[in-house]
Image (cartoon, rainbow, N blue to C red; front, side, top):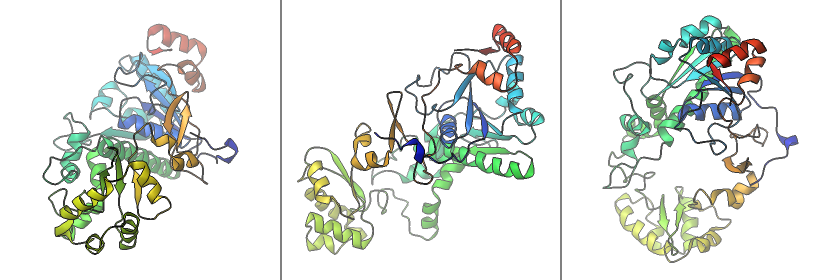
Length: 390
């Protein structure tokens, strides 16, 4: 793993932005990571003792690169501490069920009363309204309701949950981070903050935009595993190798498909039948029979330098060692742990260098001092149990 020289790292785009994160798990921390990676000062407000469902520091990647202050949100003095922190913040976000923040006393009205320009982000699965809003759920349920889950999987098989990438992270945390940045930009012009309702059902639906377009045009078959991008096509799938590993092939465009045929020395039957959809299952078997004659390393060498849209299917432990990822510094070492580098890049370099996740409460005293609390106040809050130090 490599990191760019610090001299090449440009000024982070969100430098000078302060965001409060009422810590949770999954999509909320991912939004916090994205914002911190872009240079925002993200202050993670943890419960004393931390969240038992969170990965312990320094292993946690999602909790990286921000301060941690531990506050008891069931203590009125703890709530007052959060509201005072809001006075100097650009945004706050939470991931509670609708109404919970209001009952605690840190809802949008409470926080914006202290700072009218504060952008208030809300991360939920079902959204702040609608018949399912108060119900529990997880990524798999949210993407099920959007049509995304139904569309993912092989022909004749059950829908295949794509980890929790589509709901929690792509349709959830990233949508929240985007919404907060949009809200902050507007607030700096108007002086007025807004409430950002980031719902995973909305985000996952947005991620399916292209497929809705195909469906509108009558170009998407509702039977999964029969379309070009859902493993229906022989030229867009993964294939087992001789050494029981996997490779990916995706030469959609005819010129790239021709290159694949050249590299693998495929016969004329495969060459001339790329878009004969009725033959895709048969042609996939023929292509699989060719691929499985070679090991993954042999195929890597064979496709080296080709535009045939090929890549080996790497395990998590292999990805940081691939020459392309090494050359780009796509992974970085953070306190002895492997992390994806911040993305996207600016002027060719990641905008920040991540640091390890803090133990909950590590920065309680320093954060409160920076926010204008005096030492005696902090000692009183700690003694009362309203806030805690690591």
